[in-house]
Image (tube, rainbow, N blue to C red; front, side):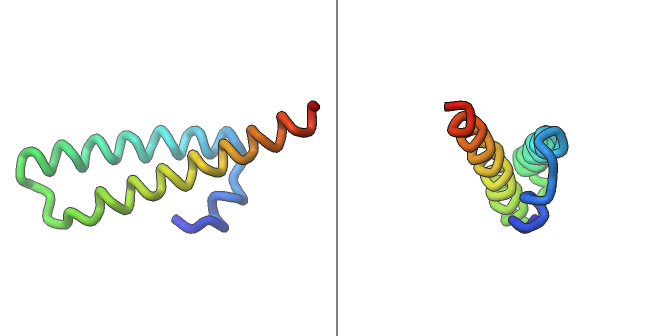
Length: 69
């Protein structure tokens, strides 16, 4: 997922995407524990996507708070 894609999403879409990514991370970790994960780098990529989404959400939250003050 690219930053351009994330920036074009609304907050509701980002929250649903975050939940989806967390679920995917859980499933990947479960597959890793059972030995069924062929590509370990998938976990790293999903973690980075989660961080990107959280960063954009936080930036928007800070911007909204600054506008109120």
